[in-house]
Length: 98
Image (cartoon, helix red, strand yellow):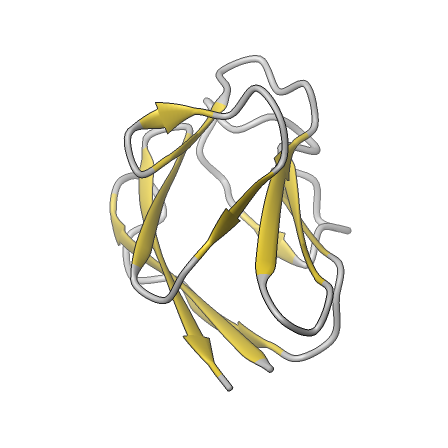
């Protein structure tokens, strides 16, 4: 399974990466798998993992929350191809292949 994360709008617009090894971390620190420079993104904002069937995103108690398809994450949630994630001021598109 491959996941491509694309920043559609926001502070890090145009950034895009594909992943095949999970879990992946998203945040402001350089040791994150997908680093965002937006000051509204926490150092370790959220993580994405898979069980081989579906992908799940989990907020890591970030200051400004993680929003999946318009809903604030209060627990880990599964997502599908084409779903949207808001992290800081960035709108991310999540594309699943496989």
